[in-house]
Image 1 (tube, rainbow, N blue to C red):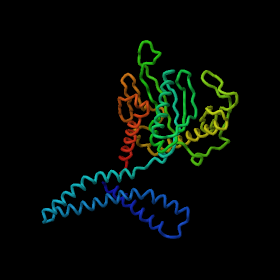
Image 2: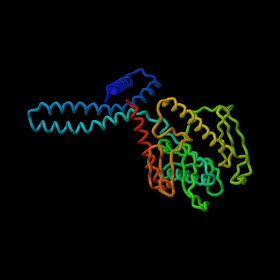
Image 3: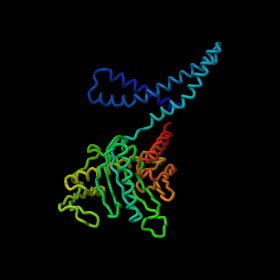
Image 4: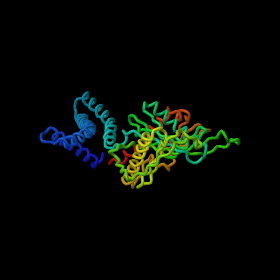
Length: 358
């Protein structure tokens, strides 16, 4: 490792030691104690890895010295063997140290709001959007997550114009955040008599769920309209004004919620989605500022970015951001094959951020 990184490791170790002494002393206020304790606990695993690296480096120096100066052939052979083992172990420890320094996405542990919308391609795009929505629903079930439908606008032939859900569980956003973007499908529609392959698309957005403390929404910034819910083709779902449309005046964001029969529940769900969208807008703005000079290997997560193609005739799924192609389209759409793509995207993201650690 270079001198700059070595110096940074020394600084972290010193800071950890300083925090330990401060926490062991008296006279720290409750607020300061909580703040210092949090920093100490966050540094502890990093310092443990640094200590393991430092110990291995020290042991290597000692073993190399014995191997180079020892008169006892047996002792020399043992020292050379130990030195070789340590040389092989050091790169792994150095990588672990660098990984510990990679900033964690603060939103990885959050729940998520999933939004899927049909794009270009008419009825075929709506059918594909419905398939994607079911894919994520199955994936959530396989991981033991709670999948709660927020809203769904159906086309009447098994497709959806748009659908949204709240997904709750461990590490939801961390696993799904790279799904945002344009998903493209290539196949022969059932209505196509000539057998020509059509290309359609659907847009996926995965938003970290925001708490009220994360985003403050002023009532005066909202316009709330209520009306009667309607189903496919304008069919009346109920006879009360339970559907809610919330417009956030400063940004122009509009959220419509009509899945529940209760106006109160629809309003609560709509505010939940609005809060998530506003929080995501903040995230994207911050990410753009931080990464103005480089783009992440797995993409920005922008909804206009084409991220994946599902080719039915060839039975393949290709993720364009990491050039990964898998010939298991059925398993992926069933949810069980999605982990392989998610793992590859996560690894690519980690490698990209790791390369930035100097």
